[in-house]
Image 1 (cartoon, rainbow, N blue to C red):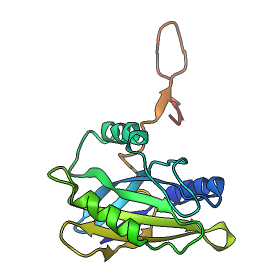
Image 2: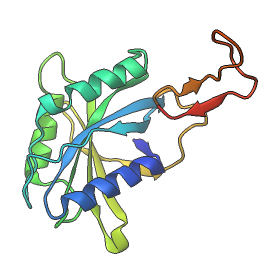
Image 3: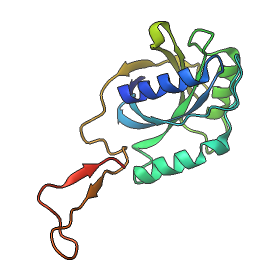
Length: 187
């Protein structure tokens, strides 16, 4: 399995990890199915609470709004855009899953009829020069975890997962009338 990670999310990880210091933090990965066994992480949630120097406990209620907004943004196209997995940091350890991490991820993919077909676990940490180090594994029901290849790649030019941009209109005469040089601003 190959998972792409855009530079803006690497920056988001770096900022969150710097803020957390030696405490573990984590969240949810949402992504896009790009090709057979190839996915793209399009966003992450960040939970700053629930972690110590050697443990992180994700609180599902803190991520429900994030998931709902993601599905609304992507038109609820669940076959293309969906939950991809979990992430958390190992600020004091190598970015490899612990025995507890393996057990928890296996439980996610074996949790009854609503369990995902697979789940990726991404472990991150700040390495030398405050650069991000990461490792990832994929979990599926009834199978041993498999390593995931992480690629850093730019977002597509027309990324449907980004929030819509707002168009600012100027007044030309009484009533609304768009100008020929439309201003665009971020949402």
